Amino acid sequence: MIKGIAASPGYAAERVFVLKEAELVIPRETIAAAQADSEQQKLREVLEQVKIEIAVTRETVRQRIGEHECAIFDSHLMILDDPTLVEEMDKEIKGENKNAVWAAYHVFSGHIAFFEQLDDEYLRERAADFKDLRDKIARKMLGIADSSLDQIERPIILVTHDLTPSQTARLKPEWIKGIVTEIGGTTSHSAILARTLQIPAVVGCGSILDNITNDTTLALDGNTGELQLNPDAERINRYQRLQREYVEELAVLRDAAHAPAHTSDGKLIEVAGNIGTPEDCKAVLANGGDGIGLFRSEFLFLEREQMPSEDEQFEAYAAVAREMAGRPVIIRTMDIGGDKQLPYLKMEPEENPFLGFRAIRLCLAEKEMFLTQLRAILRASLFGNVKVMFPMIATVEELLEAKALWEQAKEQLAARQASFAEQIETGIMIEIPSAALIVDQLAPHVDFFSIGSNDLIQYTFAADRMNQKVGYLYNPGHPAILRLIGKVVQDAHAQGKWVGVCGEMAGDPNYAKELVALGVDELSMTPSSIPKMKQEIKQMVVHSK
View 1 (tube, rainbow, N blue to C red):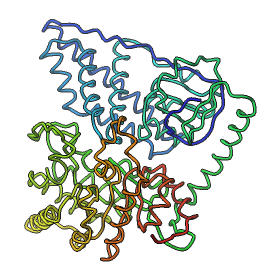
View 2: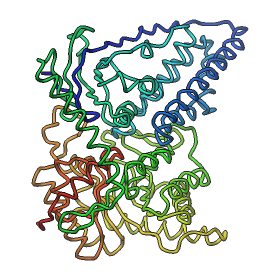
View 3: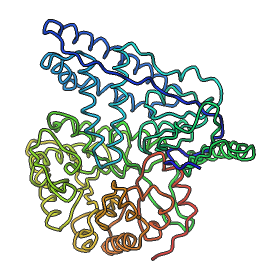
């Protein structure tokens, strides 16, 4: 038995197909100044060719799956159209006298390294976008053909080190019955596409390629992350039957997910989606989400040389508000710092950045930057049911200062006769134990609370959730966490304020019943988790704690 990470639910039992890409060897050459122009021209021609290929892939995905899953490739095209990225590559060619393929590979590798060191799993997985583009550009420049995925014409379980979004988009679900990778996580684009294509997937399986060949048969359980090599006929037949039943159940779940989720004894639980870009809200709607419970706005601020303008932010927020058509859209003000550094801000290195100058602490110091974002959010409020949420609040004083800047942003817009909604709900995230313990003091100043369970757990136990050595302490079901959540709900409800949960705990059926029993009013999660969660809620009976 091999244990990996369950990335896409379902079952499969087939012979494997081992996909091994040719190793890329990138030549590093010093070129003469006279060669720079031709190398730059070569780079631009390849970039245009890659854009065309991505556009073709996008259209294929649109026809096979739907418009909402094309956001992956829209993101790839945006990256390639980023003038600062091209400038970086030009600088390597002309300024450093490097050959084009090395320049492109080196620049993209720098961006990959940036995303891979982030603590936020959603943002960390975006490194896959840059890897996909980097390797696609390098292969094109080196004349290396793409993998042989298109030639697969028998039922198989695909086993590979990693699977790029472009490769995943080329998969034929009629033949690909399962996916296994040595690395990866549940929030990668490949995992998301696998779930959309209803292909069971297990990722993070270590060195599984050392133990299998194309003659190996594999039984895959995408619900538990378990794999079994060369299973007997009984298991093969059972897994294939379970997969047929699962596909039928999923179709029913998605249809039912567009209705509100009431527990069996009548309590309404709002089930929303977490997003990082405007394109992500399409997946929330497709899966029956009741709204956006967490819009991670910092995605607009990362991987750029200057801060996004007020108009640029406004367009992004307004696009989501329009798309959600009156459903709630909670925009979290930027959570920058810690693992997310901005080149256009002077941020001194810190010994412990996750306990340092980040999120609301940074925003209260960089007031003009914060006011710019607040004005953009206010302007976007005209286009839908927009709410604002402040992260990492630890004290009443921080909240009051943030609220004062919120009012100042309103005054600035009024002074230039810019319109915004009169009534906008404001809330805070409960991520720090100090805030959880003073909700009774915070409640008079907000309309709602959203519990960021990921950070609340790691701060409560003083245990880095990315450090495997202390992983045993990262326990969402521990009594300390449940008592904190219960206290937050009780104190908030006592003053008529609602409470949501937007961390990983919210989308986990193992904890959802406990959260609902504690009185939580809203759960926000990865969009693909919404249909199953709504089904779970409808089967619950609320017992007050």
